[in-house]
Image (tube, rainbow over all chains, first blue to last red; front, side, top):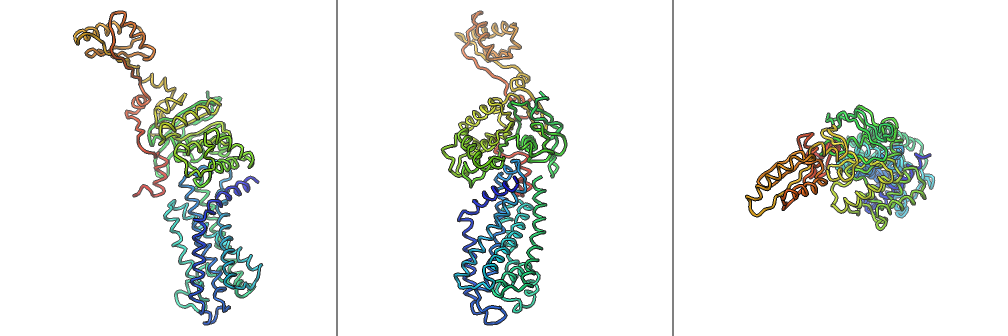
Length: 253
Length: 343
């Protein structure tokens, strides 16, 4: 259908913009750096027990993917806002197209970005000698988690972009994402956490997604945590998608 | 006119969320093939009206139809018959000129090959073929307006909306745009432009509406509007051996000229004559001949015609200031909304 065709071409255009090295390299560099730095810092910590693996590189990889897709979710709002400020967004709205193809063309880039990031981080993990317990299929599920969960954060940044119409606010939305990323079982399993931190970690949806992905790397097909992660992902993405679509609709009428 | 009107606006009102009434009961129509202009200062409601017609803004009340389609009920049909080039040019800076036009073509329903062919054609039309592969962000101001114009033409629209198409351009680029617009209009495309520049409205438009504070204060051809304000003035200095002789000559000339049928009035100050006539250019040779017949020679002659600024002055008591950089009521509202004006 024509709406799918329009979405595809707008997606291609947005993808081209993202594929500028200055845009896609820095987040990858930071992810790689975080991975290597934290892995080096905590390499012996698995001796404490409770990690389900002796390989800290394997323990860490799921969180590295999650932080990458969460942080770069902010790019979606920023890209949309840039088009709004330049007037190009109006130009797109002037064409006799379904206006949601503009939004979905942008969200698809977010999903593509998340997939690319996950693939590259997994490749680094392989390079570091990580063995994935659930094999190829598990890796596909891991990538799926990254793509869908990344979408939630892209929606959030688009919501911020539409509500604030401020480049500064949208750019600094990652500050808001920070606690979500770090108040998790990023570096330690839950059993080793205590006090308010443990409470916050348990309340944070990012924890469940990180755990689900981690289980797939270090344990295998343990259903309960994987399903928990799945529900949390769906429960985050669906309302945020609805909110984004609703706000977008309002902003374009 | 109303039958073959391609743009019909009835009692259009637009109130922005902040309460600003940008368009206040505006009614007008534009015939197919016409070159029509909205002339007025910043904040007059020009851009707002155009954005409503272009389906970019909702209206508060009233009716607006473009190409026979209602802008509120059939926005996509309106979009398919009109091209729109904006004041704050909405370009994709990171795309090459060609890619930008190709995507536009595709979004207007062409397949890739058609869109490529159309892009080549349009790049040629606006004389940008040489820089087609260059990123739009690297284009000069004039080139940006031209690529924007090309984008607006991608689907062969019947109506072209141009919001201040030459604001901020150097005279040479402005002339280039004017020529393009005249060519397009000759090919049958209806053009509706907004401008703050009297010269632009005067030079290009067959008919204009002068707008101020959201209302149309005058409408007509530039010639009629100017004629309404008053006569042309032919100003002449009488020649002579000395001041005395010149003064006498002027007195004699004044008396004689005021009896001519096509002269509406004569004012004599020392040896200068100001003669009011309907059409200064046509009357000047006759006036000189008449003076020659009574032995009065003229050392200096100049012509002064009313401008559209005089028309604006007559209807609003103010002059159009078009020297202010950019901005319109839409832009102001947007900036306020974005929190940029709260510095």
